Length: 373
Image 1 (spheres, rainbow, N blue to C red):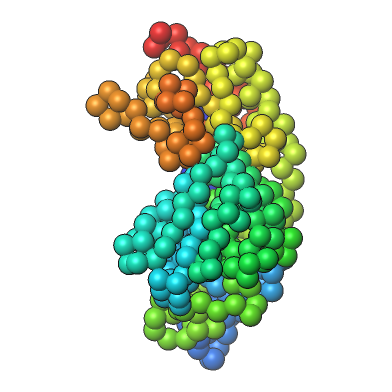
Image 2: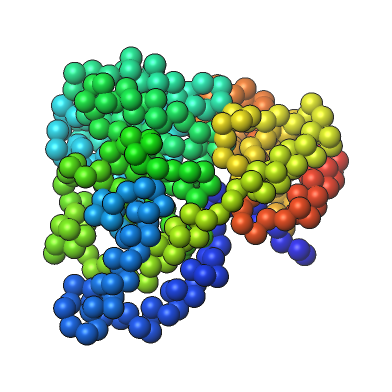
């Protein structure tokens, strides 16, 4: 059985160059980066080099980068940091289409007394800056809207939303876990105060991420202990994983996504030719990540269709429970018809995807649909 991986938005393989960097440091940088002796110095240098590489990718300064355990921790740090700073006067605006790391954190903060507004989206899953402005109150302290949606790939107008935040003197955060490495992400162009990065979406290992904190902004430490990461995140730095993220960022900086976009578009054209009106695109047709194709097939639920192709790794936008289908929060926020949404499948391509993959998957999907009809 030839396995085909089309779930790069869920997690990416570790790039060979990243793995090489990790293996080298396992032997050479075992000292504590906080130590000033001969064993600690190489570890410290590796961490700071990684900080520079990560900062360079997003147009930040190295001192604006805090290494974390991943996107979830970065998101939690911002949301809970704002809450602990302002308490009940720290109104937060987010959307119903955010990653669970944002939505569940906001629901937790609501239980603690924080006022949170969850905005809807348009039919493409994008947040309207006008809706953000309408939701602002005198106590609004943070707007947190993801840069690109993990399910549909739709890209939010972060620059316009950030402009709203500036007019009202509100902090702006974006979860850029999905967009980093796929489209240009520059913090000065986006004009955000905080930005979250997840390494395993970027051909680095799981368990490493970063948080951009704009110079001049402060957040309470999320982890308490010694004064690591300039006192912003306690805990001895994971030298190997930090270096892995830095290397992955360097590789992403030189990556050309044109070929990947063509491959994705070719895949969509093949699906349209094969299934006609029985396949529908979910998400924005143009303002979308170059690797992401979320479509709904008429008839069976997405999970049922994927179950017929066990060699294919892809994701669904719905969950089956005892014969019923529950749409994902993202599809719900978009106002997707349940009959359409139940057949949703997200195909996300990546660095190692090939044309033969999309040819095979199209054929496998056609055969699976025939078996289920």
